[in-house]
Length: 181
Length: 145
Image (cartoon, rainbow over all chains, first blue to last red; front, side, top):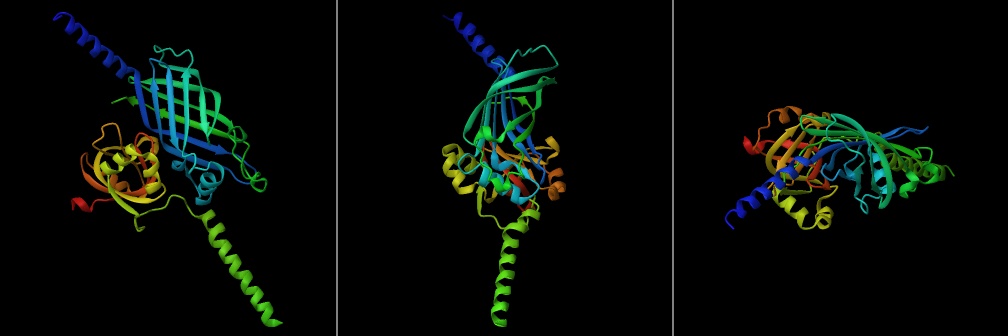
């Protein structure tokens, strides 16, 4: 029994260490979106996006507060949160996905991340082309993706339809640190 | 008849002013406002705020989300990631903190902040992910003076 106990302790310790190395967190991830329309371009930035990267299971999770998007003008912020996204009812947007064919040995690779994006309470399965860079033992994930406003049941009154593009470009950049529990 | 016309014009002018105040003015108003001279709606310390969010996110959101609040806490980290000036306040809860996105007018104060320094941050509460998010923050250093 005395001989088995240290072995078990070592096993638990090793398991603990390996999970630490494989999990990364970004608390200040950057997500921006851009709407190009004839009337005006609308751009917003969110610099407090949370993301957790689990390389053992090749999974990624992202969560962001819709009210943390910063616009150039107050009115854009109000319209976005009150009329379109309805942030009081749906305060967060989330994404959970799997990195397809991830190779841990490569310093830089572009892979598809397949998962479910939830905005405005509507979930859609999407594939996002993502650049994954390994920098000093941690990771940087970046890329962009186009979403159609209608896919997420976001209603734009006909009178304002010329102000907002039907397709919105979302850009992201997550700089991870090792996960400290 | 003249009186009627004057009354009509006054109504039109009032309507235009009201419309301008509520619809046109916000359009030109910059969203990145300085909260230095704006009164806060609540005052709380970082531990209580995080504990409250962990206990019930929905209830705490109703109390603080979208409001200007003053939070007292200790500096865990200062970062300049994504070209933003960010101060993170720590709490008793190891995994959660308060992410304060600092207004550009406060840059000198941010540069001089030290780890574990006690400060008051006034900002707009946006909600909770793993950390509480405060935007447009103004730093009050009076505590240490």
